[in-house]
Length: 445
Image (cartoon, rainbow, N blue to C red; front, side, top):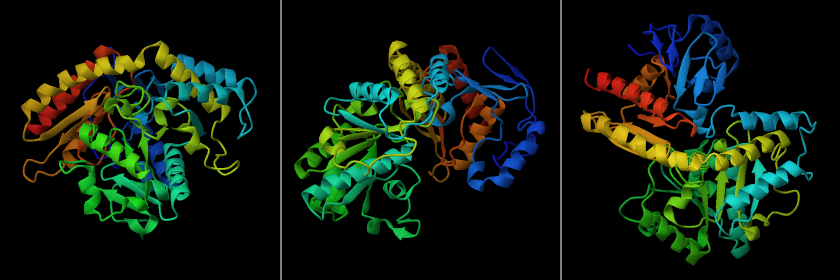
């Protein structure tokens, strides 16, 4: 029986020794249990959602524990290590910066921040010519929401509403949670009272019909925030929906902010996932893969929007931290020079080919296989209820970990395949073969 992430009873494993994987102990490792228990004593239970394995070293596309086990990482940590874990060029940039010594600058001018921002706006779609740095993706999304509201208030005092889409995720602080899909109340407050209005996930009706069904007047709307490709489904929004949204926003002077915290920085085979639609947003938020290492995020937008906040009213204590900025600069530089965006597109085509036979073998249990580049997911459906098969998906993820393939448990009925863009082609194929074997065994049991 597969373990639960909360269960610390060591489960036997079969020995695994390949070029890329090694499993030599039960999982969780008996020697690790004291450490995990001590962590759980001092951390809130919200931190116990990951597989109970101890990370010791993470390099490239592999993660190792202190006990001799080694995994092919299909998680990138949490969709973070786009250029791989501990890329030598990122490490060297961090070392140079820590040796400078300059570890903190706040908003004072600094060369490393200047270089990173110049590179970011150069990579961004035309017209997005200013950027600001923060620490987390949630912080960047909060900034984007604030900017959209400031822009709306310049037009009319009533233009303050923020639209978002069901099934999209934007973070865990109040405005970011209000913009994310889920219950009608956010921390006990009705979403509408916060000025946030949730629309259905894009479907056949189209954007205008969805908006009308909510009874919203465009005069009350300042902006809309959505993931360019949602992290839950990893499926592109319908192209016509996105074009309609852009046209509507233009007509009603509404800004569009696209959240690329997960799907951006090369992961989908484009530097920014919004490029798949051929439309331009007003704001882009990015993080995670922006540095592939240290905490840094960004908001990129047009000068007239980014300059709405006066001096001192839009900054962050650790935003643009020189060590983090140096890591991000090196990360973006190496991604271009090593062709990692193109590599993601190429490996994504292979991944689609390798996953297709698995889905064909289990049409009653695998509802969808979606993705672009190295941003894929397999969605399991309970054949008896037609609902997301949460228990089965988590069981498969945990069994893959016991066989040397690292996935995170989603708790939502799907398996997420988001390896570093540097992953060896044969390692990716081997990992998919392990997943396929586990799915075949579990779905036909």
